[in-house]
Amino acid sequence: MQPSKDISRLIEIMAALRTPLTGCPWDVEQTFASIAPYTIEEAYEVADAIARGDMDDLRDELGDLLLQVVYHARMAEEAGDFAFGDVVEAVTRKMIRRHPHVFGDETARGAGMAKGVWEKIKAGEKAEKRAARLARGLPAEDHGGGYLDGLPVALPALTRALKLQQKAAQVGFDWGAVGPVLDKMEEEIAELREAIAAADRAASEDEFGDLLFVVVNLGRHLGLDAEKALSGTNEKFRSRFHFVEKAVLAEGKSLETATLDEMEAHWQRAKPAIG
Image (cartoon, rainbow, N blue to C red; front, side, top):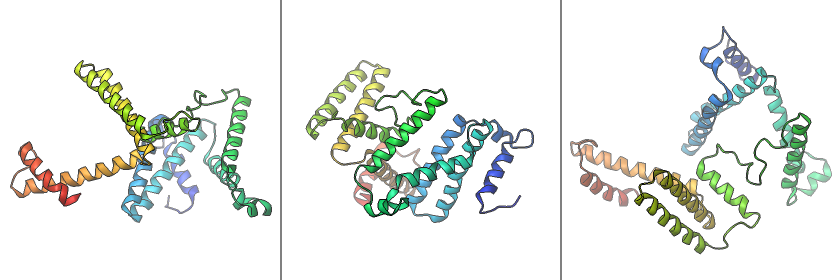
């Protein structure tokens, strides 16, 4: 079998990998649940290639992400649910429907994208999906059905916290200023201190989570993205620690043999050098 730019070749390869007896034993035994973590990982690797501006890596990582789509579609086809073509048809239908100002008739294109139209289109799609599920004898919603239940659980925790807060704020469940959020943060810190003092690990984890949630809320009120802010701090920490590592090695030592005081001294020099 030869490589090809045609998506059908990739679909053929996945079918061959998933074929019992003649396929790859590892691929054959995989399920939606076992593959899902790889799907998330590949999406992050795409984002990483973009952040680094590496187009060669981006090409490869997009291929790996596409493979995940083909993989899930193949398993769904084996189960008799849908195939890759159905995935393509669904997303093309969605894009055409959500952009009447681009793909609609002359009147729709001339009107442009009016305010609120996007939300109305999405609401219509949800209603159709709900009706289709009911027609198949399934629950109207594939989750709890509550106002906040539609947000994917697999989102990064900080991102999901932000989206939960944003959605709750849309119906007025929100503080009107930064001050009360800071007060809530102090309250959560005090409760975390109490849990730590009591050596209660479960309570400490719970209060720590509450504190993180409030920190995300503070960022939202300040117009700051917690995920982006923490990513920046992660990179800053990595760069400073690399500075410390090089300084320690230049002294003929290793990170394992250097004392905390020595590493701290180098860390303080790294701060103005790196920022």
